[in-house]
Picture 1 (tube, rainbow, N blue to C red):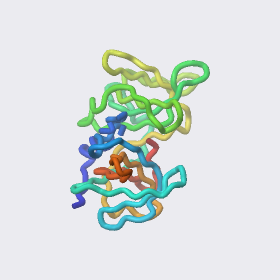
Picture 2: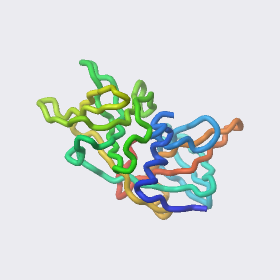
Picture 3: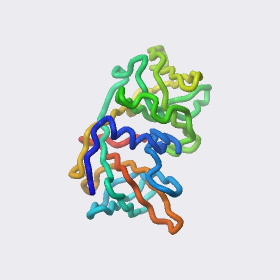
Picture 4: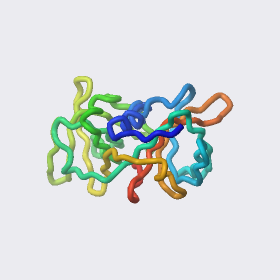
Length: 211
């Protein structure tokens, strides 16, 4: 049975894979028992509790939606929305000149601060990582904005190039899961290869989930 998630809870899901094994948190908490699989793509069809998605790799996959499955959205935000003390999830890649460069930034609601804290391997791109952490400071310099985040007593500086997607959590309903809508799903893969999920993250108003 479907239910809508409020912004606060909805991030919980998202992040848990910890959205992230990794966001294990941007993660989305692991959807169910089994190997976690992150699915990114466009909806082909939603029929009852079965969601069909054409992935970014071009494959069409079927996802069984578990009882009580939830849906959340993402909406555009700006770097100006980020303040010291905020909790963010940043996917990044090592830069050739050292340090990390952001691929995307997710700004969490205050109630989700601390969820999935840490830095994990991520599969947005080869060699990417996901860091869920508290913003220590955000400064503008000649190279653009650099965000310093702290987690588990460590600090990490991440450059955020112009054009980097910045999003936050937004409400969404089952009605938003239309053919063509872009989604991010952390699913569990059973021994027989079937995928199941408890949460779906969908883009709002043309915003593509960048995770």
